[in-house]
Image: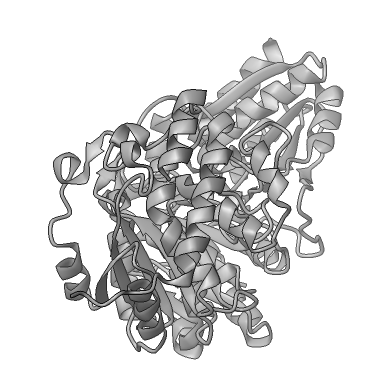
Length: 259
Length: 315
């Protein structure tokens, strides 16, 4: 008989964040697929008691995952949760792509491949603090990423952690078809990084990888195997849900019920 | 005082860095060309070498600046801001990071290097970005003053430097102020506006006018528009109101050049004036042994300015 494994307490927390995400994009639209695949990662970063964001920094390089970060920051008390309903509206601070107009956001992005360079600059300027960057797998097709990998290796940025939301999809289809990354972990290792591969929906694995990364002398990459649209069965691994304009009442109800 | 704009930059930065511990240099494998060898030796902890990777360098500079540093991102203009424009837009300007972009070897003055290195589009790339301030020093002395000024500003800025030694024209008694132009020579007939060492041509043309019986009474009002953004609109408008004639002279593409912005300024202010814009007209540069050959070929040389002066007086 298999032993009964108690679910990690953050499982319940991120489940409620998924409901917030669906409520947010129901009327306003947004990049739901990647937000659902990365929300567990951001939950671990912000609610795993690993980092102190009075001094440590989180840089969202994949700026289209703004809905996920906004949900996290609202629930962490950076701004009132009711603002989530105003996402991407004219008079809202919640810009479509992540913006530092929003309390708690440290870096505005949307154009891919840039956040890791910015994180390298922070890591160099504040060697005693931890810099956590979140990139997407598709984003690794940008040349700038590879320039920053060389840089982090040269300057031995042990306080830098890059989490890759490896959901295997990008806007037009599977990463493996558009431009394959093949052995991404192997590539990071060759570039002089410490690499850990985890199940990006398993909190014990994510948290222990982050704890280990905190102690490293070399730049750290955590490749988090995730599922696009995780939690909403009909969105899972369906790249049509990379970005939605809004959700019909029927789809919204269906998504809420399957969650 | 040196008459090398690049050397003035490198030496000024060392002087500043001795007292200001927050000054950092981000380099893209061009430290010798930017006279930064001594900086790298004296302040190795504050000299960050990124290699030939200008896009990452712009992002690193932006992140470093967010930790309270004043970061000078240094390369040739044809690489930075030409290669890394989108990173400058997002990571530096949109995030309002305190990065000073130094683009050296701009314009046709990089004579023998040819089209790929004679950056003629940098000012249009930089002027169009919100939060960005843009400067083009007249000479080595003004370079020193501009670098000292921006080192204590918190905004992103771009400074255009050139490769060769150039005559010192800036009055050492004057200060550089962001958003202010200087009238290098007062005159009554034609306003000549430009930026950078090319303005020296206007003095040569004035000397030629003085020797010519027909023109010896004509005088040029020469304005050094080194603060390209913000632009000193008041000084230009006041001068054009007086002269009714404007020649804009620049070692840059006409398309997207500052001359276009000044023409639009004149129209918006309901001024009528005769206008000639001397700039590179939709062409790539090419190699030559002297800059004069190139300036004549592209229509921005002394003789071209003299012809424009005669033409605009007839108009």
